[in-house]
Image (tube, rainbow, N blue to C red; front, side):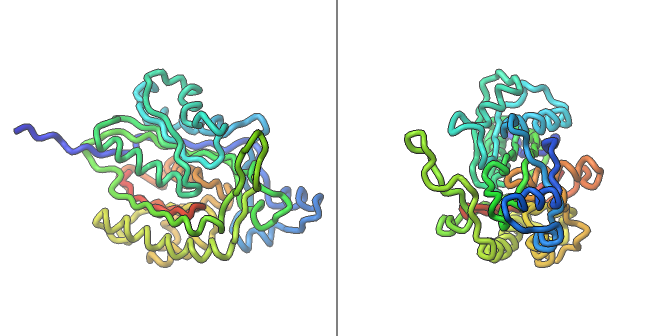
Length: 330
């Protein structure tokens, strides 16, 4: 009887992109002051750890940010462009209602092989969701090489009269290329959702007859999100580790969703990990939703902290309410 080898997925390359406009807390505070909203660098840093973020220019779409991140990831992977058979874009800020941002990206990349392309919408957990989906499709044998991207232009959902939300978010994109391998790469993942908490973090608008109904701005109950996030992040991290047959002390690097430094530090402490093993980019990037984890991953790969063979735990939580984690051997 013929025995077929087990197929795994491995990260072949990473890439990221930040739009050119860097907005410091001071610059943001000055903009808000013109609308009668008071804030300051000290207020923002003390509550979030954020010092700056990047905003896309008016002519930049989410797919444009994703394009640069994708090109850099493909170059790092060293594979032919046409070998990408699957594109998954995690985003809550697509270019259009449809077609998907992934299809638009496929065209911009010049991929003409008829491979699958679609978006995943799980807000800030989106990259963890997309990674798990791509891993499953590769392990099934359906695809050999996948491009997985988190890309957002969250600045377009912000109400700049609401200082509790508009100071938190930024734009950007991060990408990985996953390839089929006989060696395990994505070791385990865990995904969850609870729609009963949808109201605490949402953009409750829709289009009807060419008119936006409801609100097109992001709404958040900060204390409720904080409480829920700290609770579920520890649990889902431990679940993913258990599936991988590992304990937290075997992890080389923790990459949490870059939302708020206090949430990140709380999760790190609960897992018993030293803060030096947590990748932190929230201070410079702000919360880039689905882009935050792959952005941070690429930063740490390119500055040499994350090396081949390192074991990385990623985890995210977002509107929905969704949460997820994955354990990766680089």
